[in-house]
Amino acid sequence: MKKIWKRIAVAVSAVVAVVGAFVGSGAAGGTPIQDAAGGALSASSTAIAPDGPAFSIWSVVYVGLIAYAIRQLFRTSDDARHATLAVPAILSLLLNAAWILSVQFGFLWASEPIIVALLAVLVWTFTILRRTKPSGIVEAIVTDGTFGLYLGWVCVATAANTAAVLTAAGFRGFDLGQDVWGVLVAAVAGLVGLLLAVWGRGRLAPMLSLAWGLAWVAVARLDGPLVSTPTAVAAVVAAAAVVVVTVAVRARAGWSGARGLARVSG
Image (tube, rainbow, N blue to C red; front, side):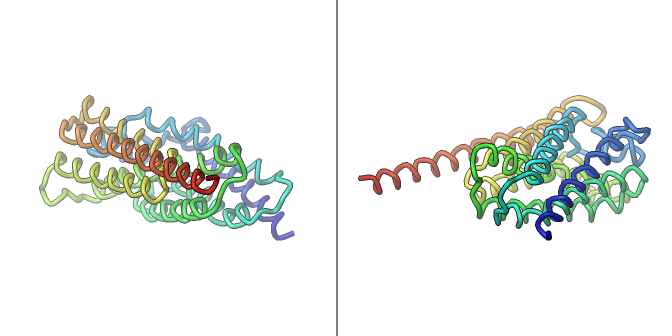
C-alpha cells in the first residue's frame, strides 16, 4: 500500500505542477511569469536573463513529467529505482508550483530559497538516476531524459532568478557593471554544465537544456533594451563548451565500454 500511495502522490504532484504552470502562463487569469513581480524576470531585467522563447522548454519538461507520472503510476513492477525516485520527484513538482505562486503573488524574495531548494532536489534526483540503470529506451527517455532537461534548465533559471532577486533588492554588483557580472555568471553556468557532463558521464539531456538557456541569454543580450555583447559572447562560448565536453565524455565512455566488451568476448 505504501508503494501505491507513493505512485499516487507523484501523479497528484504532477497535476499540481501542471496547474501551476497553467496559472503561470497567464492563461487562467494570472500574470505571465515574465511580467509578474513588476517584470523582475523579464528578458531585460538583468544581464543573465534569457529571452522569452527560452521558456518554451517548460512545455517539453511538463510533457515529460506527465509521461513520467503516468508511467510510474501504471507500471507493473515495484522496482527500487522508481521507489527511490518518488520522494525527490514529488518535492521537485511541488517546489515548481510553489516557485510560480511566489512570483505570481509578488513574493520575489521567497522565490529564491524555493528555486535553490528545487535545484538541490534535482541534483538529488540526478544522483539517483546516475547510480541506477533504466529498464529500457522508453525509461531512459521518459525518466532520465525528462529529469535531465529539468535539471539543466533549472541551473540557468536559478542564475537568472538570483540575479533578479538581487537587482530588485537594490544590489548593484559592487559597481562592476553589467558586462562583468554577465560574463562571470555565464562562465559559472558553463562550469556547472561541464561538471554535469563529467559527473553524468556525458548525459545529453542536461547539456541540451543548459545550452539552450545560455543560447537564449546570448540572444537577449544582442538585441533589446539591455544589450551586452561581452555577456552574449561569454554565453555562446559557455554553451559551446558544454556541448563539446558532453559529447566528448559520452564518446569516450562509449569507446571504453566497447573496448571492455571486446576484451570480455575475446
